[in-house]
Amino acid sequence: MTTQAFFQREFASALDEVGGTLQDALAALRERDWIDAGQEFYARLCLEEALVNAVTHGNDSDPSRSVRIEMAEDGDVCVIRVFDEGEGFSPADVRPPDTEQMDGRGICLIRYCMEQVEYDASEHCLIMKMRRNALCQGGSRNG
Image (cartoon, rainbow, N blue to C red; front, side, top):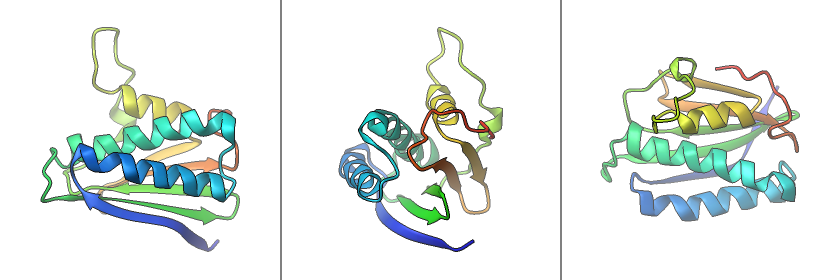
């Protein structure tokens, strides 16, 4: 299958840079009919968690580093890739947090909403996949 990018953005690794990118990415998903109004909350949640995690955990909030997001169409699948310059992690190793623990909630929510989640260590890239208008509709929950 051929992937066709429909959104790309790179920004300095700072939390105040996330908002504009998040809004533009959501607009691109709506324009390409990947999400409907009822799924915007879940898309916002997943994208914001991925971008904030890239800034804070991946790049240690170092504004000299950058975060990049790319969204592409691969047939009937939307592939969202979030790159950082950090050491990486394995989404499969992140377990649901207990009630006292704050860390780990974001990736657990992403895994719940997206059809597939994985991390490409060689590219320092979180990869999220979803089908058109199918967020939180019961994917494979990989990763």
